[in-house]
Image 1: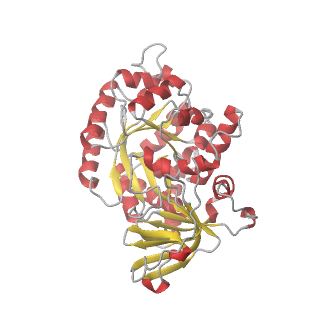
Image 2: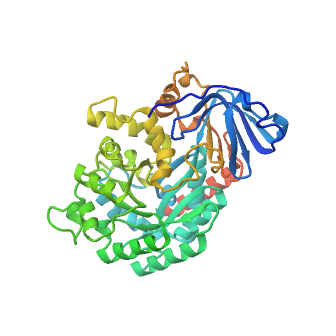
Image 3: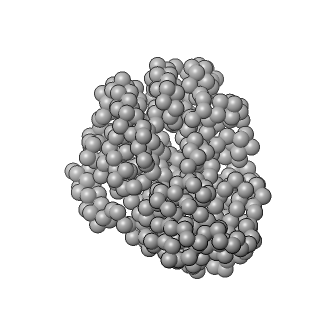
Length: 457
């Protein structure tokens, strides 16, 4: 993509008399739009829930036209980051079991812990705690799969976080659903409750081909198609996954198993995709599927590094995700951006693959594309006012250069979660000057410690 740096040309009278709720001034505005527009010294105006205007400072409306004016000198404003695959409530299992392979980690530690401890209150509290962590990282949207999904959705709505949320349907009993049919019922209830919600979008989630029967996968795919919702699953996460699919055929990849039973299609988000072959990737392109790339979790569980460059060349949508904090062990999407670029260079032995701009795109524009969303992911007039303000004044960000790719390099290779200064979702300032504005962090910590004591009993 050729990046265009917008020139500061004065347009007379275009903004005078306009009324805005928030006016962000004197920032490097990185729009992540389809032409790569950026304003090295620009502004963003917000009215209600939408971006009302943006551009060079020469076009900025008068400060007295806005209810709140925020000075963003030495900052970058970019679209709010999107976590394309996570399990928010697993924050309370952070550090419970580490340095284990996937199957042992799941079957001997995580699933037993979930069976013992998960309740609606546990999931709500843990999800609210995770939402706070997301906001402090500049994340404005998550794509979550978990148990008691209605309580995940309720927590995200209460936190003001944009969220795609689905009940993890699986062939085994869960604390929320004794049977998979109960999981479908919970999915139906989630859809009925949140289908038209301002922030929460319901999704259809099936855990994985190795933990679901063809009947489950096909039935839930039908539900997703009926309502035009995302179909979210784990796929090609570990090398031995084909051997664990009891209904799979010999020498058949997990993706080909799904293709054979007719559940590939547009709006499918496949988490991980570590062991996708070029042939698998071609089928994903042909059927409109995409991948949520989780490099930290993949590496920590010893599953390998996904062939992201091949996915880019295969023209399938790619976004980044943290996975749950039990296998990461945080929700810091900046680490995923960083690793998405670096790990691919190592795998392909080529420093030119997955450049910085592409890596930043995985958490913004491309992430929205993966989630089939056209109302966030870019700073464009009329889109939802979901954005992050990143402080670039720290020593680790200096010196700063002015060539068009410099800002992408800073964000992809240098920026840390602690550099995020402000986070705005749907026009609401939820994190301001590194302090949560709607959530009580002290209370969240107390609740987390309360649950940690119970888990330790």
